[in-house]
Length: 306
Length: 306
Image (tube, rainbow over all chains, first blue to last red; front, top):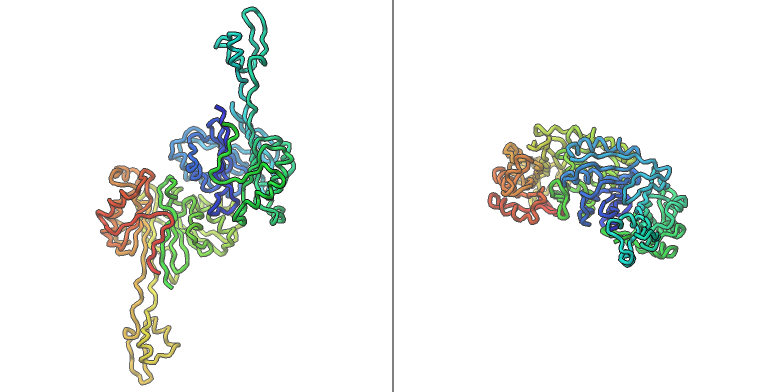
């Protein structure tokens, strides 16, 4: 099982509308859930998408603007009611602990789990989480306040055994684990069978990059080069390009330019301003630059690996 | 214009479900909006019900449990984006200012309005707000933490002029305002015409009581005696009556008993536990005791006066 999916819970900009919730996503890597941003309503959207809260252990907050973190207290309270335990780690700007602790201590003091804040410095790209399945790295972004995106990189799996060759060489079961890890096989006669003959390479690791909120920044290109899926904010269309310089956001066309230059597999645009009643105008502008673009929407699931 | 309406934004218990949001309401008195509790998602529900945020100046929080106040920060942020200004008063337990201020100061420091906390003592019934249109009084409730409900009492309007009598006595326009306020009329010949002949009594003031969260408490009956509409929590049905003693909540039947003894006009029950997939069972139990009971639901508008 190598499931890798991205679930969009909210893809609107600062003001929630009747069409979009503020930013929140769940990245599902082999049935471990990772939350990326947690705008108001994230817990309800999670329930709507039938995502199991007890599988959530890490929450990554891109920056401390309300539309990216005001859902945190409600989520943690509901996780407590749902019997989550152990530890929940909130990866966020160093201010987060100071800012959230008074409310957490007041409202969630009876929670059956510990909330641990992992302060992240958004100025350089760093590994902030790693497990057997996934490595999470920060992507420094360019916004009004210190902000970083996140790169989720699957850890390469084992090589795949070739059934025909196992049979041909009559390889005993107990040796298969080490062969999956790349070891050669030595026959009882002393002949060395190279691992490449017995196995096929592991499936290439899936990679997902989340870049929101940010103005156009070519500095991120080397960090997201060739990812399978890039989520990049596209708050505005060409009509409002002037606003990107004062608000530190991007246009759909700028998001697509980053996607094209970084040679990504697919671009998902989101963080839509409430000024667009129909985001297809943003989609069209992005596709002029990068055809493999789709619009985010609440409830959407993007499957990188089944 | 003497509009008096109650808009239900959320009527679920602690865990938001796909059917209910946590507690929040808007009381509209003559197009001034008053919020009662502010659970997560209240701002979106407000928008869905087409309630104009710029008309909201006072927020009343019954108690400091997350499902009654976690929507506050998102609401205040969005009010700022919507250009609300002046002062927003949050009437809440004295701890509220200490608990919310660190986040307000961090996330809302550029808001174009002042947030003022009015500490309310939930141990006795007090007038905490009054204007020309409405008086708001606390109702001490019995819950796990200090809690109070709120009584919204319309200020009596002026007496209504009788057109036929104005004409009969040929009363000049400039005198009408004082006659509405109860003054007699003296004819040029010196005859005194009693005000009761010239006017009909003002419409009786509408009264609305909000009682959530609370266990069964007869102490509140004198405070809510004869209100037009009572909203009383009904977290549980008869099947879970045992839980009311540990959670300090009420059953639907208990809510109806309070309504019957207080001789109210109508009972709205809400704050439904997620264990009930269909709240009609709660409605049936309440109606056995007090027939004029209805179920709250999100988006519902109860009109006390047009």
